[in-house]
Amino acid sequence: MTDAWPKELRVSKDRRSLTIVFDNGESYVLTSELLRVASPSAEVQGHSPEQRQTVPGKINVEIAKMEPVGNYAVRIIFDDMHDTGLFSWDYLIDLGRNKDIRWQAYLDELTEKGLSREPFTPRRVT
Image 1 (spheres, rainbow, N blue to C red):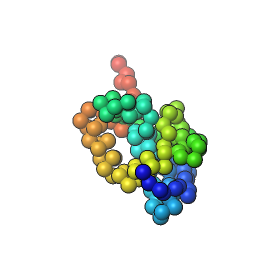
Image 2: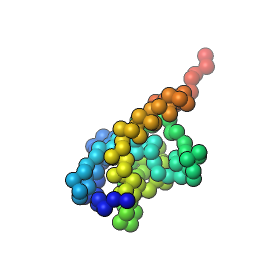
Image 3: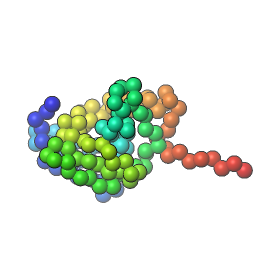
Image 4: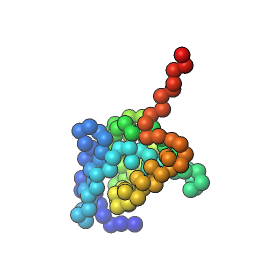
């Protein structure tokens, strides 16, 4: 648990990243794709490590809007309609501090499972 408090949360103009500035001087830019695939929702994380899902096809996902949740979190609504993750300040600072490790682990999972960052498009049978 951290005592850091967000001073600023700013969505980029292209809606593909979130900049978070904490009162302890730390600041991070998190891509919308990372936020979406690492959503703290039960839909993504499951109720145990074995239930955690690898979410493919989100390279183009955007942040549609954000809503404050009490004084401890923000709900990020993505343009793919995913809206069940509550991103606590602790979760966001942890994600920022470990984004490179988390991102590489995600890329490794995609490769291992034969999945892609690109959205699935059905092939046309001719």
